Length: 292
Ligand code: BTN
Image 1 (tube, rainbow, N blue to C red):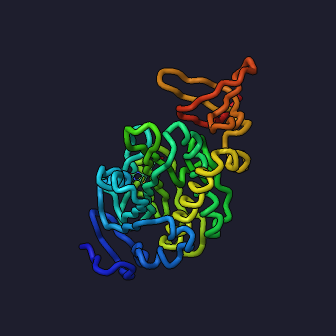
Image 2 (tube, rainbow, N blue to C red):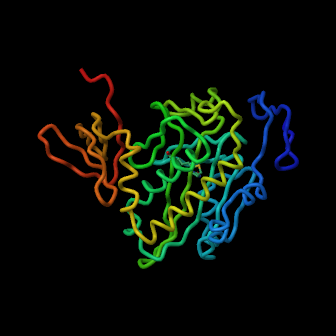
């Protein structure tokens, strides 16, 4: 049985598609999110859509009519039926548990100018969570996975649209685990955690959503003006692989060595056993444990 009528309504208990909620449920509410959002961020937004269930918030904004409209649109959904992760993976997106947020932004420059954007966005998310009051140490694994105690907390998927060479539109998608039940572990390929495990207070998804949206918008504005440089130092504060033994997996090859941070464009730097520094623009990085 599903009791869902008014946004923001507290619901005692919901049984929906086989999962039971023991906690009261507070839904995302557009007016609440806007009331918590700073005026300078509201001024950048043409539209905020808060939806119940859609295949994917990224796909929703990648719709050609939305891209052509040149509007800056943010979209949140309570549930995604085909949530997308990086590298063709699925992003498990149960109803009213987490944050699934995408932002459609139109850049005046071509895609080559966006190198480092996803790293800047990852930093903005950590800073938004710190602003919310999360005090546990959060970290980033290149290019943009957020972790707490070796467990994944959030991921970012940026998709570009348009064939135009002098401008480009980007959909920046963020999935943040807020109340992800352990029962979903089977569908997720790696250990995960969620915000509620990091706080004794009940997490307010509306407040988190407004802080995240503010962080995304203000980060993009700085990035448009100044590029990646202002974010480079902030990255090293959160870099989980800095000085650690790592494996870097590219199409068809695995490289091993020590993580040496990022370069001025956000490329990953690996020092191999000969002391040579290699840089990577696209790869999976994993920390190697149990070194003997
Ligand atoms: C990753 O694999 O780490 C990236 C996950 C990105 C998931 C988010 S949820 C909101 C947006 N819509 C999607 O379909 N994917 C992104």
